[in-house]
Length: 114
Length: 111
Image (cartoon, rainbow over all chains, first blue to last red; front, side, top):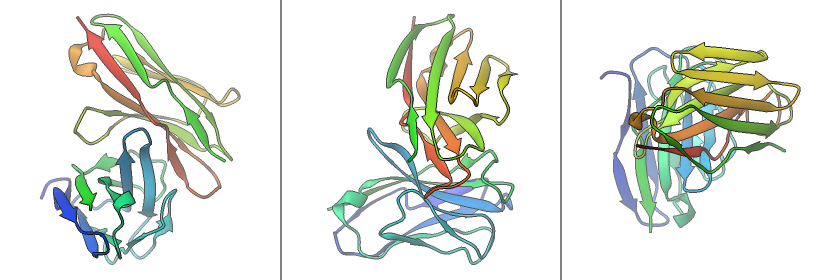
C-alpha cells in the first residue's frame, strides 16, 4: 500500500442496507477525515479523527458513524442507507493531530443508494 | 453560521494570469486552505495561509486578508493542465464543524 486507499471504488446499495466504506493509510498520519462531495454543494466534512482512539463530528454527521481503533484505518459506516446518501466519499489524512495540516486524499468511493 | 463564497466558473487563456477569489464569514478563523481538484480525481493541497499577506509557491500564489475575510489564489503562466476546480476551505475556531469548504471554482483554460 502506498499513501491512502479506499474500498470499494464504487457501490450500488439498496436503501435500508448497512454499508461500511474502508479507508487505510500507510503514512502513519495522526489525523483522518471523511468527506462527501455532491454536485453544487462541494466537499462537506462528515467525521474526523485527530488521533487513534478519538473522533469528532463534522458538518454533516447524521446517518454516519466512524471508529478509529488504530492509526491506519478509519472506516465509515452507514447503518441504514438512504438515497440522500448517494455521493462520492473521500477519505483523507494529515500528519499532525490538528486540522491545520495538509490533507492527503484517497481516490474516493462512488456510492449510489437506490 | 459559516459562509464561504467563490465564483462558480472562470475561463482564462493559456499563458495568462488568473485570480480566484474567496470570501468568508465564519465564527472564528484559524486559517485558510486552497486545494486543486481535477475532474474525477481527488483534491490535492496547494496552500495554507494563517497570517495576512502573499505566499508564493512557483506559478501559484495565495493571499490572505483576515480583517477583510478575503483570500485569493493567483495562477500565473496558465497551462492547459491548470483546468480544474479550485477549492477554498476555512479552518474555524468554534462552531459545529472545524473545517468548511466553499463550493469550488471551476477554471477552464483555453488556447
